[in-house]
Image (cartoon, rainbow, N blue to C red; front, side, top):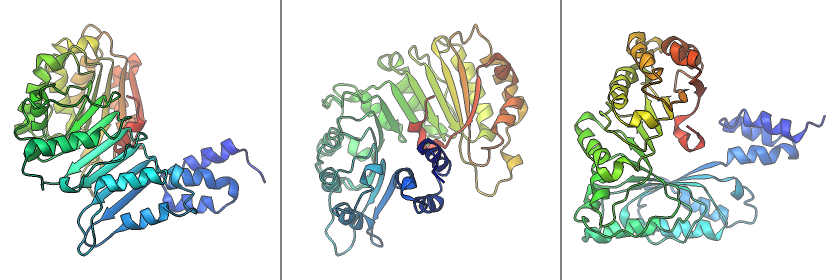
Length: 378
């Protein structure tokens, strides 16, 4: 029996996160192969350390004329660390090989030592770059920083940058004149708040319209608040994302803020978010905010579902605040995404917690994997 291609694609899309089922689908018939392959090879993880070297094997496969899956690869994760007894390719060498063999991912996650970074061949397909650089650096701090900057410029299509660097790379760079960033770069993600201070201390401050802050505790919030309160920043931030932070800051007035994203486990998001929204409602930010996105991130393994339910009382006041049209004249969407353990229960949970938002029509409920945030439209 022949099925229309659109129907086959829709069925295969339903199992896109199940590699075993995708492999079975590819064996059904030739018609099922392209879509199965599109999802099966969408993400590739390459590890090179003292125990494993899948990176070298993958490069050998790329060089083969039988490697027909290359166009399906959209995300590449490289964990590139020294292997005893074998020469170490620089990250630039690896990317050069990708360009030579036609690999064109849109997301590149690179974890390596800075001394293994090297100069890269331009890879214009990459729009999202995540850099995690180890502590071994050259003696000259500005030279180390310049090495990172030059590497980033080999991705002319870059739209978002996640920067995980040791603070020693950023020492003594105050006043350093940064090359203009790639023209489409709009978003930077940091997990070390001190990076924000260095961004402002450059000869040409690096201020982008979208900022993501991850894994920040209460002792570190001062750095974030100082950055957001800077007069050069307040009018430039359009989208602010706070992910898996132990608390939420008292947000200053951000005149350009249109989108706020909070990603935390639901069971302790309530009280922190209520304080953040109360402070925000008293500033000019509230007048421009168009959307609020809440991601319920993963909770501890083995926790019962009941233990991750947020107390209703902590959210009821927030429900009243969000539906006050005078406070939020432009707010059109409160979007809620379920996290691990809550995917199927998110709709009924939000109906209980935010009934006024539901009645007003601004509440939208979905189930999205927060690990792939670049596939979302907040």
